[in-house]
Image (cartoon, rainbow, N blue to C red; front, side, top):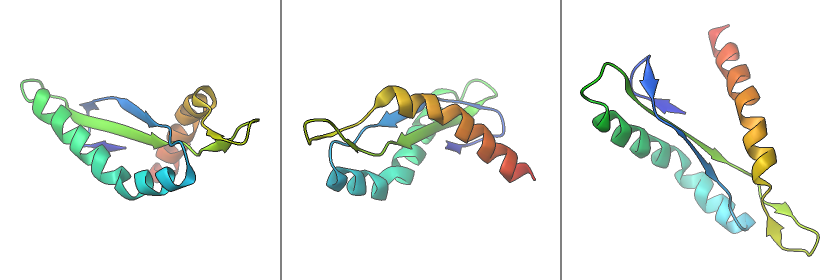
Length: 93
């Protein structure tokens, strides 16, 4: 999660890699993608007091029943808010 001010607006991007190789590639560029998306949002909101922000979540590919790698979007999205809040609380302690 990247933000350019304490009060910021942005969004959430979920990345669902189709293979372990794609997961490694996405993992290497994850921060840059979040930073660039947050900066673009920051420029978009320059006329209001809020800054720009963006969260990017990289989900693990999971082996499906037919042997191919298939992500489970609902589980990944459902797990994000709790983990994000726990991280915020951990940083405040």
